[in-house]
Image (tube, rainbow, N blue to C red):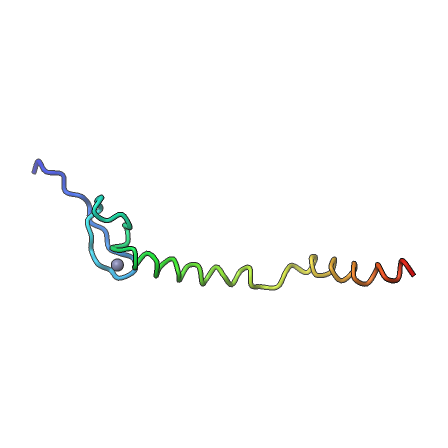
Length: 74
Ligand SMILES: [Zn+2]
């Protein structure tokens, strides 16, 4: 065997086996579509983290400010 055979990789999205070569710029995904699907799933999941309520400290601070200023100046 003198020829260099590129290693093969399975697309994490659809399981299609593709050679690890320049022909597949989206590897390990077989196509841009598969990569987009996988990225979309990842983005959706990570979206939940910032969607959660702010830290209790931040909420307390905001409440204090709102509560404090009118009384202080009156
Ligand atoms: Zn794929």
